Length: 361
Image (spheres, rainbow, N blue to C red):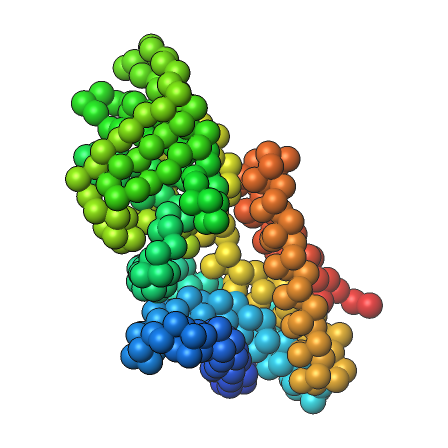
């Protein structure tokens, strides 16, 4: 039992160096790219340097979460690839340790990183993103640009929730507006309008429908209107803090919004897909470890092999996730299938390669 434990710690030490290097390196690259964009706020819009510094700090958790799966992939390929290149992997396997047993610590580390990523994505990143976006919204709002954004949920006061599908900043008009008002019953009153505007504390909705739902969720009364005004006691700048994109919500908050829409009979496929992806994407660290470990058996070029394969795998994975999301949003695939399809394919290939690793050639 002593040999496997020593080998485990040896592989963990080999793994942690490239992992830490990649997390720090990619985070610095992402910060540099964001800082390049934010310099316009300092020199063009005269935003204080302190404010821009806070915005960088708010965005830091999101950047670290993005780098963790990439770091696991890179560290797996580099650490195990080095063992293969120096024939250490061959010696260990000849000594009686199977390949699945040898890569076990790397796979466990990938799973642990996935758990940390999920926790951060739920507890830290949404609130940090919300603070970043609110700071940016206040900067934009100070220039007189409409503060309402596209595809954003927000609470409008008096048990009233808003969702705006499209925003025309030049004409200052809103399109495809949804308002649901919570009352004493289990289902809300639903107001939809093709277009509208918001001035001071008055919402002006045009060409819309008001639907009253009964206790079973069916439409009991429907009224069409040419124009409707909704007066709120909240000032315009209050909505800045109420607006939230899906990146500013954790799974629990997003699920609450989805359930409100679904109770009203509306399809919200894009939000359902994003809800499932909030779990699927953090699991990519575990998937990458499972997929990349057996690939190192074909390594003959050490670190250059790890870098090259990392770039190819990252490209295939994230392009695949984008395509799968699009298929889910457009109803081609069920939302949960769209979110987990690429993870499933990568995991399947990884498991098959691991199973074949110890078969006699």
